[in-house]
Amino acid sequence: MSSVNKGINLVHSIKSIESNKLGTKLKMFRILLFLIFGAILGLLAKFADTVGINVDSTALLKIYQYSLSMISDITTNLGIWVFIAAVIAARSRSPKAAAIHVFVFFFGVLLAYYVYSTMLFGFFPTYYFYRWGLICLLSPIGAYVVWYARGKGWIAAICSSPPIALLLTIGFGFFYTHSLLQGINLLLSILLLVALPSNNVQRLRVLPFVAVLFFLIKKLELISLLFGGL
Image (tube, rainbow, N blue to C red; front, side):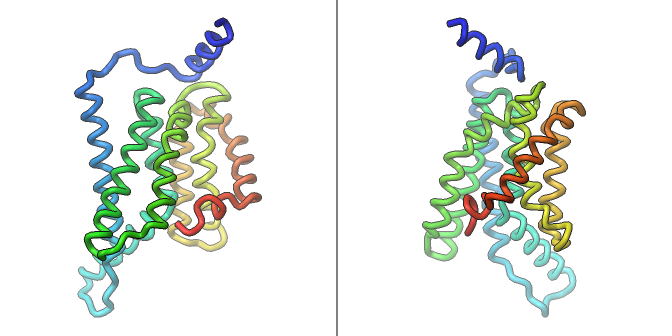
């Protein structure tokens, strides 16, 4: 029993759960908000996929079309979803809430995106649905871990590092390709470095873990292995 208590105390020493409890209605309302938020982004992502660029369009219409094209490029890229999920998890009230909120968010994205796709084109892209569905099912695990990122100590620093390292790996090519999309991913990794650790000391603690994970992800080609084809 003493070892269990020590483990609980260790977890609580990283980051404490807010003591003031929310009512069931407010909890359900927050879950509904994340579901709606995900659904809106899913619809936007799919709508942006369907709009082409017409060279004969007026200048104003071209701006609209290019904007949607950029949105399509961003939302079909892994980086933005890692960033949003990490922020949702870190800002949730508890690790359990983080897991639920991130899962519901991705569920909303997938539901809206693929229902819209089926209604619009009359077919269901099974392969992509299963791949993204697996990410959705596994996302609560990552969210639970990332919730501790805003805590204190070395364990909190470890919890901060995976999403930052992943975004850094995706965006690192910007330094030699100057790709706008990779630049956005690089910027998102910097924003997470600012947003996740709770203070400057924690940010310094995060850096060596980010460096190690960055090296491993690059060396083992984990992006292609885990997310290739998405």
